[in-house]
Image 1: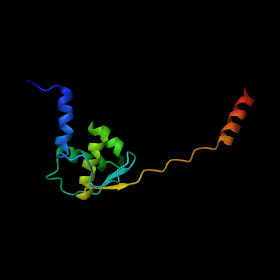
Image 2: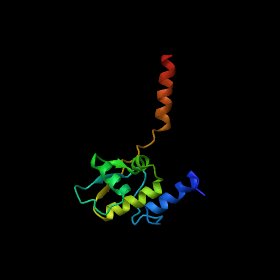
Image 3: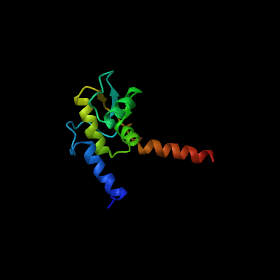
Image 4: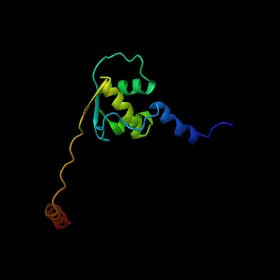
Length: 118
């Protein structure tokens, strides 16, 4: 009996991480930027890890972007990224902080100004 596609999709991430569900580091938010550190040897890396390093050689990518390129869940991607940071292939930077929310008074003044122009 051949496994259904959904069943294979559930097994694959488990195999990709060697059965681990948690990264060795807890520094990966979805907006954390990841960069390749240079030309370290890629021998012994899984195909997914090689793909991550090659993606990051082109410039900084967020965890969410890497996850999308790989077609893997973010949790699985975090495990792979932590392995690559531990091995020295990657480094991380915190994503840009969110801009503070505008004040309600300022928004009201903008709305009033727009209405006055109509």
